[in-house]
Length: 120
Image: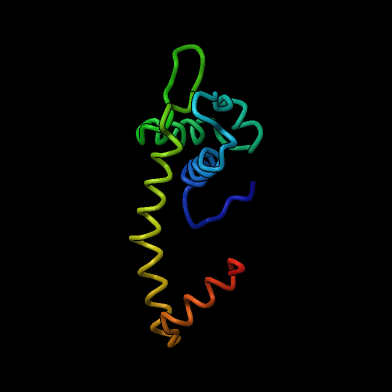
């Protein structure tokens, strides 16, 4: 994985795991790789991995099972879907509208472009 300088590595790792849960690679009830395994695989500090995992716990997406590791909780995929949808609507849509205004793109042109992109 290539890390960028835009945000801390633990947040990038957290977002990677979120994407894997959303896509179904990690299913509800699945164990996440151990902190040591992730640290070794990505050549990052184990504290960085622990911080990313703790944020996932704080978000209610994974749970720590004593002596067993971290597991994706039931309902995590739906919860993530809802969070990401809200983030898209509250952040990306306003940015898109601003860019449309800057470029003079009409709603009609945007809809046509979306339909073309979807093959409709």
